[in-house]
Image 1 (cartoon, one colour):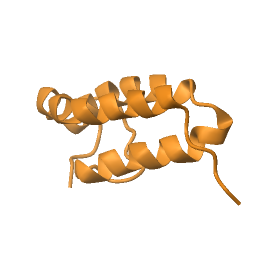
Image 2 (cartoon, one colour):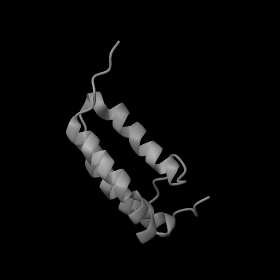
Image 3 (cartoon, rainbow, N blue to C red):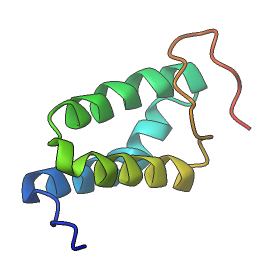
Image 4 (tube, rainbow, N blue to C red):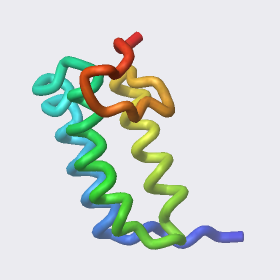
Length: 85
């Protein structure tokens, strides 16, 4: 079964988010602050994702977080966030 290519605008938005990731990390060194800033940007993109592209989009976001050393499932926004490992 062939999977259709993700929408070009989605790929462009995720590429832009990936390029901004180092700046987001640098601007928000505390885990909770990073989660808030990252979540706002990633969620805005994911909210507009077509159902057919959800797996692709979620995989790209997870890969970006992994590359930044953020544990999967880390989504606690605020000062009570656990420290980064």
